[in-house]
Image (cartoon, rainbow, N blue to C red; front, side, top):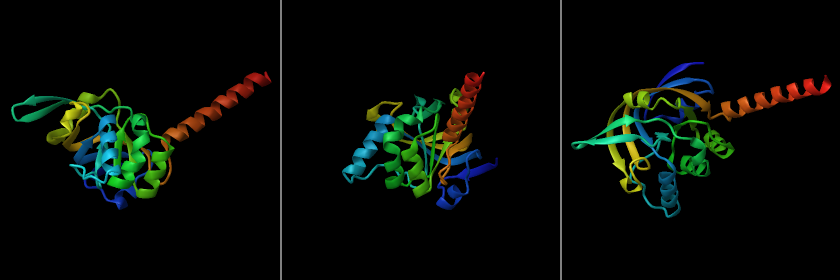
Length: 200
């Protein structure tokens, strides 16, 4: 297990150095997107329309932050991760077409996303659920917000972060998934228990 400092933009070379279990602290730009924003990005891709922000070599955070207007600025009160599997139908195409390098969320993602990460050079990192206020403390400011018509939680928020984390690499660009490995080990142990019970 290594502790690694990353700063956006993130090169494919640095992404390929990461392995399942590494701890990452991320500084620079983090861009949020939940279900509605993913669907809109997919529509833009299909229609070959320009998206009003760049995800190339960036970090995409599955998050619907709690924000409050304060004069001409936005204050981030909480910024915990949302369940990433909801974005599984979209994420492989987002990685392929928009060049995302680091996806942050909770709960892991599926095989289609894992294969896209392996092919194009991206990773998935987990941030602890239930630590939304801690996450907000690592966000220095709101750089911009796009697609506010989707509503505050579903809009795309562009944050400047300082040592956001710790993030644990759950899926790396070599095809390993911590989630799949845990499932396989759990099934193996369960089968052993069942066999022991049957043989008694």
